[in-house]
Picture 1 (cartoon, chains in turn yellow, red):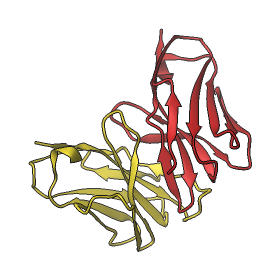
Picture 2 (cartoon, chains in turn blue, yellow):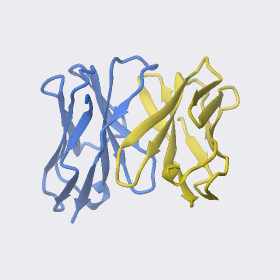
Picture 3 (tube, helix red, strand yellow):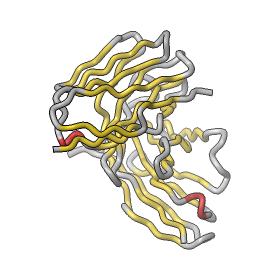
Length: 114
Length: 111
């Protein structure tokens, strides 16, 4: 089945130790998104790619970066994780950059920072 | 800045009841509104999407309405079942393909 896949599902890292989260999609969608969802809070958009064009939200911390080497894959890099970065990280895709399109979400990666 | 609020934060009902979840948003300049379901520790599943020009959408036992001018949406669940237990999130789509979410309503349906 076509889908959005996130690896790993659970990630534990130490304070300040860089970590990379992975997202892949078999939907052949042009747009990929990264959201951060802290416990009992609303998901918050960090950034998105339309093809290789990168769009950063104004309040996304500098500590977060992203790479999209090809259509299928997108990575979230956290350079120096702090305790406040512990959260569920959700990847999503949509077919086009039109605001009428549905976004399809992956299962998420839960990040724990020790 | 768009703010999305969901009421109630949590709801517990006996099996078989009809129920309504509420969502409100502060800026009516939206393209669409979506309702999502999130099971514990899982990602989001899209339930219904209402375009800004539409008033409601239905899927099975679910019906969502949208009143853009007043900044409100409701999700109606008929004949609730224990399998409906989950967190339900409302999100509005803004210019730039940006989804702004509410914090969700945690629903528990007791058998």
